[in-house]
Length: 233
Length: 233
Image (cartoon, rainbow over the protein chains, first blue to last red):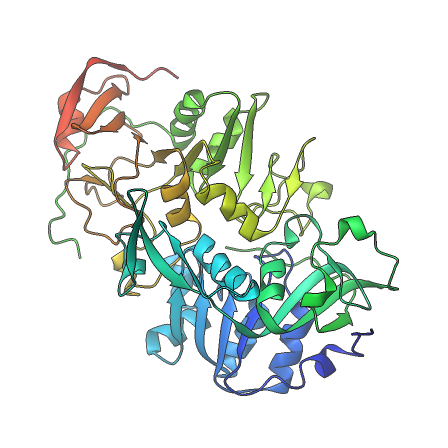
């Protein structure tokens, strides 16, 4: 089996208008930079983007914002931390104008919604968010005296992930805290595309060290080591 | 939004520096515990636990997070959830975000230290969305809701009043909640207050400040502890 694509552009070619596309990574760690750039270059409409933040620290996704490609964002920490910086931020401005809708979930719930989708489950009950705006309109159920709310699975049409090492069959290894959302998004993606810093021949990676087994990954692109990202919250 | 907001009367005694709030909390932590520190003053707690048997978890997916990294130790793939470059320690482990929140919701975190916008008389916490920002029901939730619900003990580190002099400890939160009845202890730049079934108990005051001074800048009734004493640092 060989899942290697010649370029990021070729790997994202079939992303369609209205698709739900997830982007792994957390600030400077594990962002699928080249895939995001390729998508911005291709140009699609009405995307729903699923990502930790569309704020500062994620400039590549801002290009999709500026080109008007996004209809909705599903996030955990969407805006710049500073209210002043937020006012000048293209994503926050689009949300204030109402051109991009935004849905926010607690971090654990956000991850678990994708884990469910990847694991063939349709929902889960969590105590997180009870008594807050997050619980509005959601089924409440009590287990062992603890109030919980029903959260549903979040399946993805495409998942863009970044790995340190990968092989031709899509087995992935992440580096340090660059794993973060990449594994769970890879699991939840109908079509998961992995950009890898180094591509190994199948059989070269230690089978004991694989984080994401290749069955979750449809395409692999070698992109090299990214430059040091500027981190500015 | 701040219809009920009223300027509190502050004593002439200078308040504690943020680092000293962090020190008081560090002294409260027990050896052998797993601890998660939120953004802001909570992060400063890490400066006071060097050499202690306390393991810090970072929800991005790192256990036994080391001190902040500088110079050549900076690695874009090794960051904490506050987006700071950090070092590794002997015994550090990395994992994906779904495992990270299994630890948090699953009750493995002995203590979480978070900041707050408001804390109520019954220990409700409001910390993720300041209505003054004008973004409605969306904002940066981060890991706060999961931590507030999942940690065995929740300590709040904050200034006693807002920069505008309004109370942050209130009868009932007017800002969007992070979680209900979750706070155990509040440490401010003037006092240490415990949340108990009977109400808020004033346990410690900074030198030169009286119980009456504290009540004058608190918009919820305080019970004065029998052993009320000066905060030792």
